[in-house]
Length: 420
Image (cartoon, rainbow, N blue to C red; front, side, top):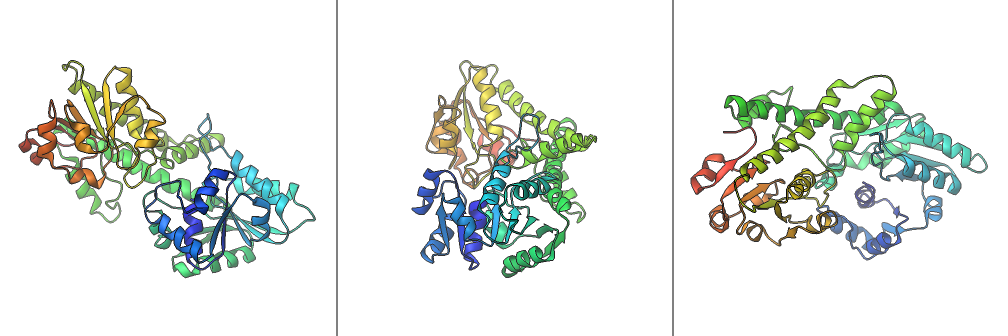
């Protein structure tokens, strides 16, 4: 979030200083070595480094001194009880307080629960020197991994939650070149908007997966059902693709966090509690299908295509692949895996499975190929070659990327989600 936001704001003509306590990361960035995979980000950073509009440093104090607007874009990982761990946010607030030299607009960009801005304000007021004035703004991000740059430049809305007109005008001036609708609201509402949005999208995913499971019982096709639903303007087609469920760094964390916030205020968010249950169930159902398909095969080899939680990212945080691979290993199954980007990240968790450099090698002499990420590369495979290289041509398509009839005609035993 911080890196993408900084690069895009620099491209709009602002002077941007990106701060991190990780010296290794800062050294990499100063050499234009990007520590994450995000399409278009490296080119944007390189361009603005050459124009001297973006720089990277570990010198927090000087960076804050030289800035008018200070974004807090640190991580808010889930705590043990499902709530957001705000320790990094509060540490950043303290660092800002100790570095204040004149008026600043301090912006919560991290996804944080209601009440965080008030706590950040309290920390800064307690630790600042000489009563230097400042404003607090909640400005949640709505970025999708794999399309973050596009989402910043072509977003649906910009939400600004603030208490005073001076901060509002500064933020409006910052974002004016984007020509994106700006919603000005109170801080608490701004903090809740991000969680509510992600919770609703996660609900659509779990809903269509429930429909898919019913489709399998009654002989219907979930893609046809989703198409019929999605043409209704009140519903829309997005996030109605049945599969193995959601993962990543946002949906699981944010859904748990909003449910925890509700409980902390004495309310049970029943729909979201069920959304989480369904998402876990979907992983279990897919894994059971795999195990059932190989139950009669001696020493089976399972090929996994796709490790990242979605295409165009190397992020494997809470990816469905992690659950599937863990359960297969527990059953003593030999696992081979390939992802166009995320192999190295997966090796940090599962160092002992076999990683391949392409999809064809992954499938050679295997008993079943399981598609867990809908990379475009996989849709272009020569499936006749995949079929001929396999020992037992079984395909479980957990993302419904292929046409069942075409796959059957090639000779695969083909299983997908919510389709005959």
